Image (cartoon, rainbow, N blue to C red; front, side):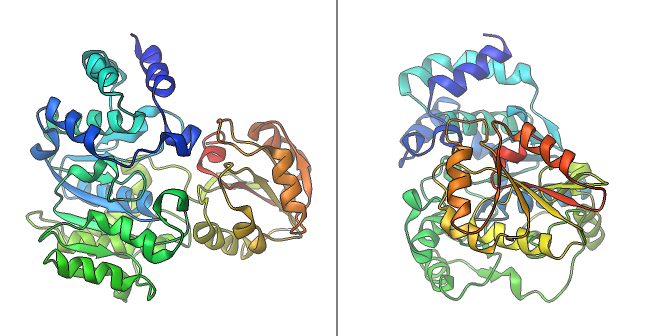
Length: 402
């Protein structure tokens, strides 16, 4: 198979949660452990940092990679989902895994993958770990896909574990209450491995403290750091992510990272890692901002930041996935904005007509469009130079405009 055929095979033959939702979710590490054994346990051949959390885990992972790169280390970075290209998920020092490496790996492992019926995510994790081991990275920053305890990435024994925060997302898998969700994410806390919690949240802090005690390890709440760190990532929500990243670096054993490395790393995240879609300004006059915030907590911060911008009229290009509880997110969306409802181009996307109907019950008015591009084009036609256009609601909406 060539690269395009390889990707098609990965995306279609095997379930992919991001595209189709619940039916792709596996609550078991058996396949991942079997694949690791088949590959010669690649995750044991490099050091790592494991990053979980409802919001901010992607940004925090990229910050950590950027800081460690500034300190001169060869740094692997595994994140999900991708925005444009599958290869974005697996990088070393900001460079994406070569397409030929992906093709060769899948072709070589195809019999095993088919016989074991591995999911898209399981095989991608195996590919990432194998690549990092073969390339002899000094350290890899590994972002959890979903949850923690039963996520395919949770076969690593990292130098430090990180949980950014806990919010309501993916409740059909992780639990209906914050302590239940925290319990799933706390599954990445391991014996004697320090754990950093990004935000102190009184309703779940005890979950992490109890797990840290059980695992005989130290726990640090990064939000208690009173210092302020600057970053080139513009979202208001990045303030807590910078504190989390710095707390991790300070607990990381065996790596020499100076204050200057931290400072420069935080201010060059986009340059060092090519991170996209985090309060990204796509153009000016009118200003077009896209952001991947997609759940209650993330969107609330993004929308509040949006309300504080200067503009004559606000235009919001909005699309969501079908399992999103829109009743949780619509109350803090501004009624005075003009809305352009669209469906992200994935099977999981919610119909733009259904979205419009649900939005109307919250006093949010606008037209429907059959694609994200058409919605954005309509917003650009309507907007004057002093207006702001915000594109978001889902990672998959942003993927179509960056």
